Image (tube, rainbow over all chains, first blue to last red; front, side, top):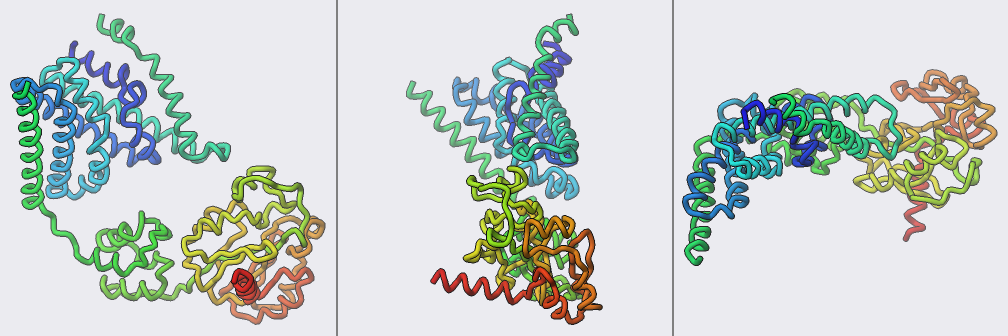
Length: 196
Length: 280
């Protein structure tokens, strides 16, 4: 698959939130205002890119030589959790400003299934190092796109009249469902048409 | 086969161990010196995590005060005592002018005094009642007596008396305003702790309409304005309100009110005591 194909696949066709339904917790929890949604989106993108690369290394240089690929899930969880913790420490030390923007979201991402999902999908698709990295970034941007759309809609919804039982989370779920329906328009046929 | 199990065991242990040690070392090297005042301020704060300050809990507010220079007067449950202590730690002049504000229900209409549209039988929740034709009371501004505020109050300062009216105990109230947020009719309002009388009505309907459905509602007759001049009574939108900054004598208005909806705040205390006696 070409790089552009990977990007389109992970941003639109297999959008992590709206098509694969991974990482729904921050999608609902952190989409109340645009600012924090964007912060969360970039934090996830960052972690996904890092996780893709590091799990690729672990998989190809530790799990395959030892013939223990079946341990991928548990080792990936270990690596991702430690990686995020480490990144948090580094950011806190180097850039307090960035830590303030991203820091509170990082622990949330530690065990987010979207991050584990991209690591496992990379393995399943036999991506090489660069492809994994690009897939990680693209999936992160897909997440950013979905959460950004969601947060802008929710900000607008705040000033609209909504029947009382639907206020807050319920209407957010309905909105998310409608967005997922809209994203069904992106499928592999689109990719084939675009890239021949 | 046995090697595979052994390999798996060893490699996961090694990876986990290496990551753990790596993180421990990194935490030591990259440690950021934390301001120890955060802990002290957090200890001083009441610790009820009511969220009245707008921060996520007391620890969040402590961090806000120390790191971001947040306003130290935001903790209403703590009151002036906590304010003074925090001011001492932070080296800021304490500005403790603000009097303790307490919540009170501005309505005393019940089945005896007011007319009802229908007999409600459903969830004991004011918002559920409100969503059904704006409550069972003819008056849509009044207390629905569903008890949502009683449930939400973190310090059990709100009681229901034997006549199905709701009262706030001002000595227990910590001014967290949670009841105000949950109340669908806005009948709970903040008043100063020292307030001697309250206008126990919240209806903005015209006097004639109020008279029809409630015998203890404010009809906007402006007698209070005349009986107690310079004591802060203002009648607007057919409802009397009190500006508590003006310290005049309000007993004239209280006694002169034709519907007796201006009541002494002692009434609330008496009702709460009476309820406690019944409970015992």
